[in-house]
Amino acid sequence: MQKLIQGIHQFQEENFHSLQGLFEKLGRGQSPETLFITCSDSRIDPNLLTRSRPGELFIVRNAGNIVPPHGSGGGEAATIEFAVAGLGVKDIIVCGHSHCGAMDGLLNPEKLADLPALSTWLDHAESTRRIVRDNYSHLNGPSLLTATVEENVLVQLEHLRTLPTVASRLVKGDLHLHGWVYKIETGEVFAWQPSSGQFVPIARYEFDADEAPARNRVAQTI
Image (tube, rainbow, N blue to C red; front, side, top):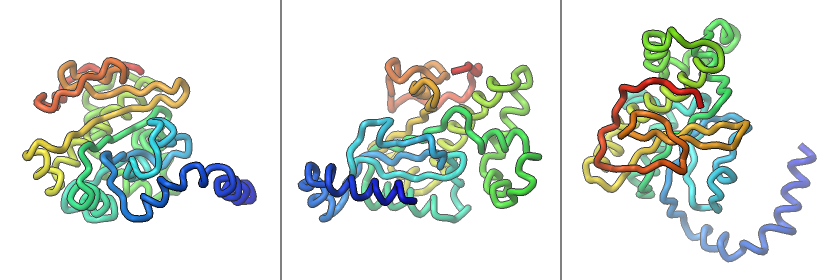
């Protein structure tokens, strides 16, 4: 805790003044263009990863970067609704990551025996579990976890489409969905490319809003 308190003092003395104009503007309101949905994992820093400034990302974090489908209730739906209908974000990113403990728990439910709340929460990723079970029996270990992380991003994108405010904006054509996977140990980011049905390095990513979100694909190890 002392380290955090010292960090606040350092922020106030060294960082705030150089950005005072920005913070004064943010004090009057926010207008982020991107909703960033990612895992609660402490190894992920969305602002550092994207080199974005305060006010540019509206962030939702939870175990497994999960979006409960419409009708499930909860804070995620309310927060997404506010971002989409209230703030008018133009893009939504669902970002999974390597070595995800939530996805490992999904694959190995015995590890969640003493975590009943987390086990129940991961019911929102049941489609992920079944997709992996039925289609990736040829994989194991890290490769299986990678495939699970990737498939979960796609499943959560599908859940996003069930939310009324998201569905309406998608029909209007002024909201776009993106699926990313962040590889912690290398700093690489891979983006879902509908045209190829694969996650590709972000440098090769070409988003086409008119492309169907093709689900059939062969898993790759990133």
